[in-house]
Image (tube, rainbow, N blue to C red; front, top):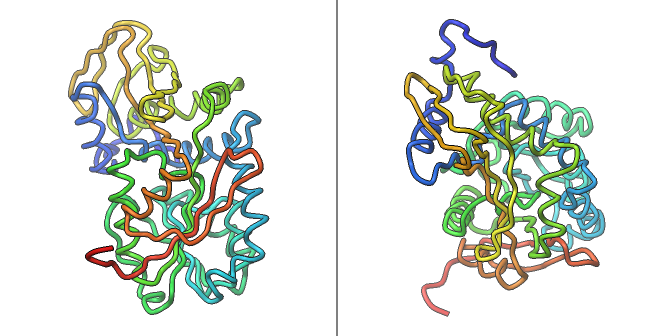
Length: 325
């Protein structure tokens, strides 16, 4: 929900972690703000629009994979698991999974409370007999899941290649945190985007309609709304580029002129051409993905991809850790 501008007490309503990440990120060089702060209500709605764009292949490709694999997924995971989704479920992907595995409960986790409640309400209406337990939290941090599902076997669901938004070190830490939250014997169904040509990748993050640009720029608008800031939005533009050395798409907000602005009483200056790094989207080869899962404490047990090899979905298990091979 958008907060009214210049409302008394607004600063006290801002998430302290958001304020800290923004101020620290703009003070460092190069400047960067964690991508998780894209997802206020407006940002979450813009991302849902992105997933329908013709240039943005990941969503429709992953849906196609899920539609093919989910009818037989119970052969791998069984029935009655509590499905824990890291990131509030989309109207397209989550129902495919829930219809297939006959879960005992569904726990969507999201940092955006408004979006979480709206999507949970939609899922509850579609599955009236399913226990839905929305959990507002930052899944990048350690979690204690609801007691209701404490003893249930669990299936983590992390679609959309969101793992690619993290550096390999952060991704490994997140996978280990998921393992700790879900417990030994849990399973994880996760999407990962594959490495491919920049001619496909760059348009997916810089679409002709400008929706991704609006999504990126909304981060600055959110800073203005919530942190008593005065950033002139017309002083920035959206930039997407392929970094071949690191196998990732990078999104930046680039200053188009020299500029000064204040946030929470602190003044920042940027020169024309300087950027704020807002997102990475790492792409993985098949072997890279399996190594990443194992580094995070998950043993891959199955893999599915589309005919063109654009995207992959992996099923992994939290097996007992061994001190040696």
